[in-house]
Image (cartoon, rainbow, N blue to C red):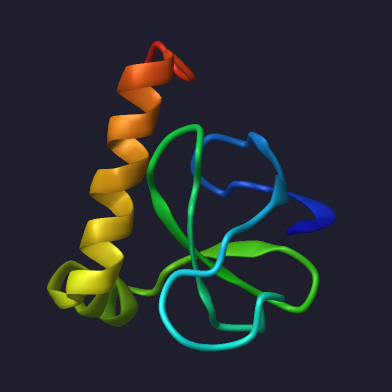
Length: 87
């Protein structure tokens, strides 16, 4: 789904689309998880952008199999498609 452009807080890439992983609506809500297609880092949606995860959230994401699967999937896409030379 297309959305208003937001910047990844890790790599500063413009993020203007998202795909739902798991349950919920197709549009991201505040506090939903985002995995950047350019750097495969996890951030959190806010009402108007993306923010870094807190230490507690980051620890929870490390233990969440859905988040880890999304990260691995994006890492594979990056490597397969050469989307980022930095990974």
